Image 1 (cartoon, one colour):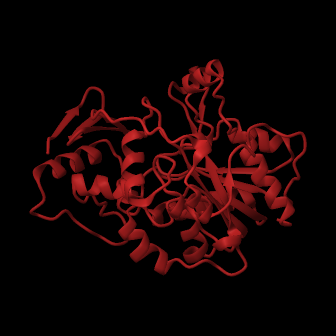
Image 2 (cartoon, rainbow, N blue to C red; image 1 turned 180 degrees about the horizontal axis):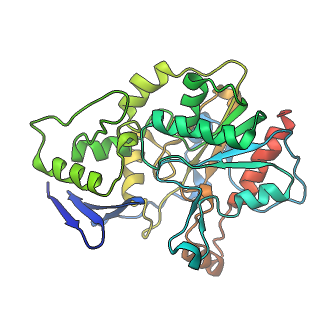
Length: 352
């Protein structure tokens, strides 16, 4: 195995190479690139393995275009970002427009009469810390109202353990959330060793016998003020043996979920991660498998989005890919804004 660590104080980037892949870490998180030449997967999305339907409804083009009419839920919707997310990011202070995490989604919901509350939690802190901040943000935004949350593990923890009194959670909708962990998180930890954050409730330290490369990476992340608490909590072992057994669903809260799957192109940033998850868990969106995304029982799982990556789900679709698709006639069948409007419509029809 080829392993190296390079730290650039000038650029504030950390590069560590594991076997055939490079991981770049900066203040905004991981970037993965693979040097291995893999043959493309020629399985067409219109000829899916029929076993995908065993996991729930298969959604191909339901959210291709924005419809004229959507019902509006009675209560506000909370949009809470996931790992390495943010509400609004200003790269050049007041001189350039801010980058919005929920690109166009918040505005589209508001236009349809939905009251939207967005939250900001520490990007890579452990679930417990993120949940505490999530509770505070919703309390400020909701002001005693009932809410429907679109989020993930932080919200599950908040609902089950923190039991907020300043607002009432009516429903939680999760989208490609790793409820049972991710094989890609397992892979990262297998290659790097445990990088654990002692600021989390369950204090852990690096094994003294761990290779020096792990200490280098860990120290580099600390130098960049990147919290690492959430990393281990995305592993399948942690989710299945620690988080899920101690975080039951709460009676009176409706739980809905969606999964997604795609086949990465040759230039996709998800080629390596998709292959790893595919081998161990099956269909996935590049980071999270459909099997791990399913939550809320048979009735709560609303379906699997076909041809949709993890970034597509928050409207961060690669614009070059979109342009190529338009030119070649292979248009995307997924519009993230139409998808979130449909979720609001679903909540409205559920009386929420």
